[in-house]
Length: 242
Image (tube, rainbow, N blue to C red; front, side, top):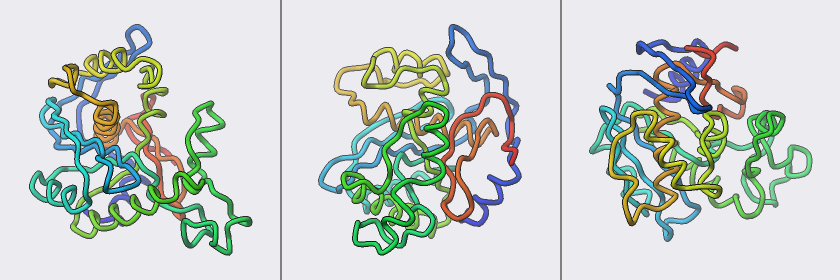
């Protein structure tokens, strides 16, 4: 499924699973069939530094660290997922033509997109995709996402920290163990609470959870057609409403 189909899905919404959501103790609880295969990727800015990887199938998640784009693509082809959910900016602000500060539109069009501005209005902070420290990551994400889409897979942009805020989960910097415990309340099974697990893998699991919200219709798409969309959970709806 290519990008055109993704945009159509975002515009009209989907309702492909029987879904119930309750909120217990401030944390949303999902009761939905785990009949999807979802890959979550907490991407790093360089292939020299491993990215967090999670694979969710039938309610069970496995995690690991993975370095190169070639390895990522090979795993995606092997696993044939319903969806790839990536924690990384996957587009430029409207009017920008490249990530660097030498872009002639740098000062006119800025370094943030509509999705970041919408999040900030809701009290959710995120890194601008084109500040110096994010430029390499953003370029890697854009290139990798396009390569994956060219193979026919659906790719969405997710933001674990924002999703955790929306779902009532603590961020990893605040309490990693409480975040892990919170993920388990969603019915995600796996040995991700043991020794050796790293926070990037936990964020990759959160990417899978965002993907699950997307496939079940419990999502909101923040952004626009020019810049693309950031997908966040939305517990008030079963399909996106423009």
